[in-house]
Image (cartoon, rainbow, N blue to C red):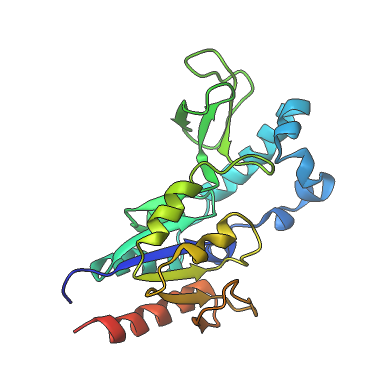
Length: 234
């Protein structure tokens, strides 16, 4: 292989599901007791910050018990053959723990906190718990470093730029229902090959040819790797 082809992967909830990461709707008691508007919006934080902290503390505790799966590891291994860039809708750190070196989190990172007054002040969280009274250096309460429903997605411009340079663009484990991320495929160059990995019948949002791998993320990434090496290796 000559110069490595640029492989850009948009990963969604289906990528982490095989690691045991539960989605919002699978969160159990806390989700059944509260609506998403009560735990994952700026208004929720304003109205009941203690509840929001508790919700994300539980998610963080769960994440620390999970490990990267075959899909995460497969994408990391593909860096041996391609210039791999991960754009993830997930707030977990499983791509990094699997060994991927270029990961852009467009919806934030669960294991980080940020100032509720200055979004540029971001901190690593030691362990799983973020408490009321934990303050940034300017004295403001720390909040989860995630993009809540109704908030802007500041990383989208970078994600669009990365996608616009792709030789290969892959969607893995995303229903392509959450915007603006679902529109990223439209930024891929016309010459780029497009791939979609999902066990469900997902309809690509473009009038372009998309190779479909109908499988869960772990198996799908393995199939993708073999097919891409057949096409580009040699």
